Length: 77
Image (cartoon, rainbow, N blue to C red; front, side, top):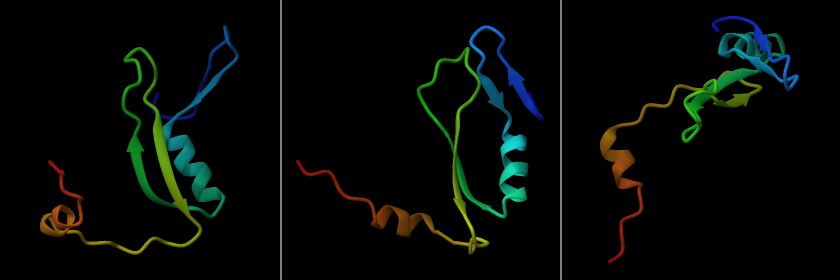
């Protein structure tokens, strides 16, 4: 499913595509800050995506690996 949506006639659910949501966000004046796939879903289901949206154009954030590691909490033994 690349565009649009899929209607399940059995349970009457609607599954919308990633491109459908992105176009909807654009039409609403929202900007996509970040997307992430939800983990742990059964393989027979469609992929579940999470969207972080903002009303403003997101600024470019440049991360370096060393900074990311430095900000993570350590393991206490």
